[in-house]
Length: 328
Image (cartoon, rainbow, N blue to C red; front, top):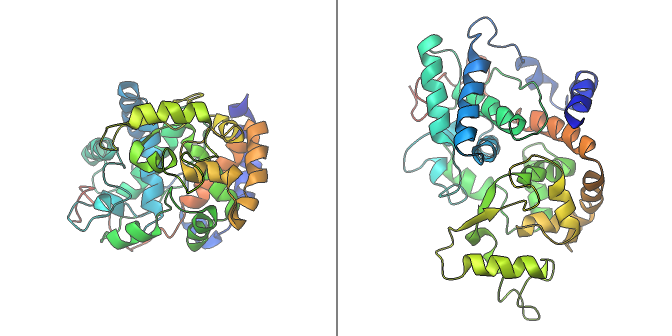
């Protein structure tokens, strides 16, 4: 029911709601490759489906890859570039961002049928869309026509990506810096309805939290005990699901979890339980999405389209990489 509802409203509302940057959206289109590489959607879809059949978590990984690409230098595929100064080796991405091999495999197949045509940045965006769809989330037409960046920006990744340790007001500011708003913060955080997180990202909530509380008081006590058992004695790389209610299903249970203190990351639970000024503007949205999955799906589509249009390279800017890991 949620999927059919969103498909009905997308045609009449998404283009209206998401035209925040008309110049860029005018350059990106959903039929950009229809004549030059008509096999594109089929190839990407097949690879993402196969990758998720082998590991369902890959849908979340591809979505996160797109997010981390767009927030640094815009959606230009720069996160894919190898090299010691690459974004993939920035602290927020190390041992965290995944899915590079899936993008490589898609690119190799595309180069065999339409060489030099499809950008790595567009592959990432399209793969993220299929990752959402195959997880049970909404379908949406991914706008295409991006070109690939020539340089990575490791310092930008270290400083510009939202951190799970930051207060909500700081996260809102980082979204504002790339043209997104508070609604986008709450909506895109809902992507944590799928995927996993490492203990190092939430273990500080489990002990020595403050002078008055050993455990974060906004964390459900039973969940805290379970997480303490998971993380005890490890190196911080043990993982658990972000949404224990429906770990691999894209739905609105993420928001329902926040209402009962079962958000895994501090930045998740802070959307509902935070005490800073930023949280005051996010709590009502959490409540709204917890009660209305259809609204979440439709707003998620809008926010994804907006995020996918953060400073893309178009026209003659950048290049179409032959290998996503290196510039031509």
